[in-house]
Length: 71
Image (cartoon, rainbow, N blue to C red; front, side, top):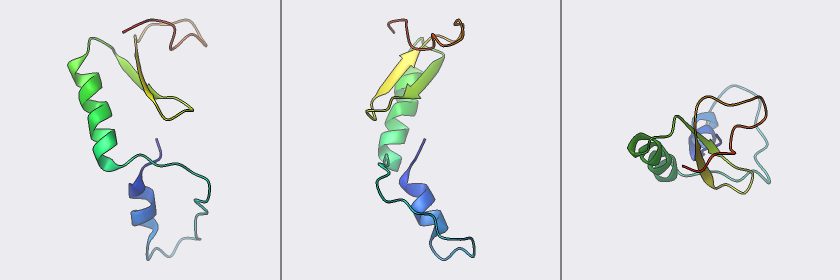
């Protein structure tokens, strides 16, 4: 999950610069909200979708069917 932490952590780093152009980030507050949604639910897995939304799911699933269930 891409967060603003990476940008802040790389500031002043001796590692090669990371190009973050075009990458959309979640704020720390958004990530915390995702964690609370997962914690408060009966779901086992939470995933960030390509559209940056957060989707809760069960933990047992056939390969490739991670987000089929409604939670």
